[in-house]
Length: 154
Image (cartoon, rainbow, N blue to C red; front, top):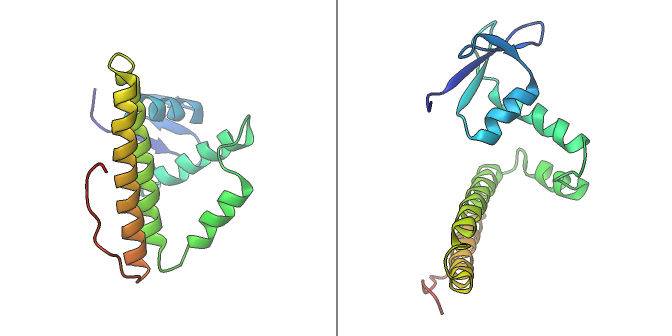
């Protein structure tokens, strides 16, 4: 089912999945994320969307157990972007980077059945082009002039 699931968070801190009509845990919400199921978490008191807060809570739990994804230095650098003029650009940059990484994971998995050397070469050229585009966008947002580039493989 591809419809967006609605999860209600009650004042007692419990999460209620309206699709399956039962209380769930943060681990269940994490499973929804991992399976790619679209969902929203709403505060039962006022129906405000608190999905981001729940996702951050899951990330915090993931970071405190096992091998962390973010170093202290990386987190400090991210925090420095809050409130700055480049906050929106940085957010788009991170989101685009993560989208690209996820797409490439899928392509690499598919490519294992194709010619792996050709696939890696194609992905490398594509990566360089995409990263250059993202860097140009960041430089433009910071007010620096950006020279036009030739597109395509060298």
